Image (cartoon, rainbow, N blue to C red; front, side, top):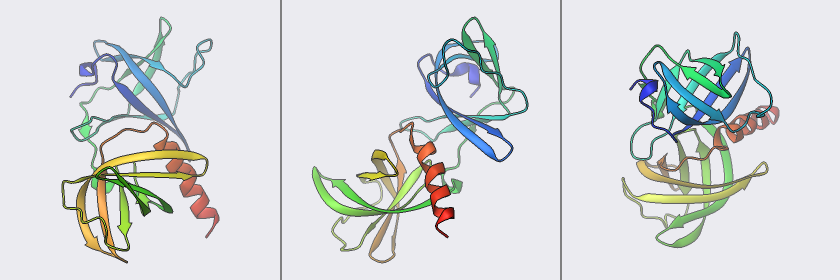
Length: 200
């Protein structure tokens, strides 16, 4: 998929890396152009232009029923009040299985069949999460949908995913693929990883 094929209204995550620092920004496609799309960055001030020189830019487009798409080596310009993002290459499918997992180890509530059951989340990546059912109460199968609600580091999340793997690990572990997008998730994972490192 070419970046210019993105539909108007599509929501994107823009990851900007400079040295060992990175930031995630949220943008919405206004209209396609010849080589990319005109976007509105909801995180940027409307009265000031942000310039990008040597930063590395990646774009992620999360789709509801298909695997996410990613463009790397993206250019960002500014034109007529909007930011223009472009890429000379087609999108690649984002490999969920290689997504970096961050240990979370937080209690919360598992939402299952209209019920709320106390639960425990082991880890999260930008594309999925792992739940542990210590008392083996969930009785989930691959393809089942499950939700998990929790709070951590000032963030409140309501995750939803489909079970993709099941294994025995201090109970039953369910590896779930995220099916809903949360714009705060990447920022939370960066902060959680920093806290994990400081506690070692």
